[in-house]
Length: 204
Image: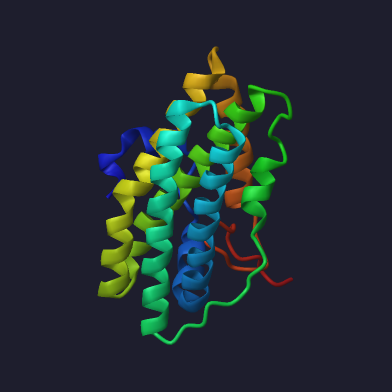
């Protein structure tokens, strides 16, 4: 499924561990709940960027579209949850996004560039995980996750393009820096399952 997006595959440092995929299959209620939270957070992030960078015309255009699409995805997940009797509950965030964002530089335009790079990794990983999960889920969920691949891949492309546009210099080193961080976050074990968690921590 991801063969249609070779740039995205090359961008990510690794595939999701098979043990994470199995963990997700065993926790589909939690998967849906956290997926809904992720879509809402993604829309909120896009809106926050629009407020922070009011003078960046291309960013305003791309983030406006992205926010609308993420809210639509939230509505779609929430509809599936309601249909299945799954309550939309509060969840603690995984360490994934914070683990990337805490390394964002604080001066401009470096802050904007790093934020765009982190956004690219989050969207690329989401796309990769939807593709990894789709073959193992029931028909409704499988079709839904496959339907998300195109937009998630485009969101990745938008974030990466904006990072390159606003950097004013090559960003290969910053991508490599966050790539190493992302790999650690994806491969290191976690105690709680989340859409962007690592594999399950084995009991001692």
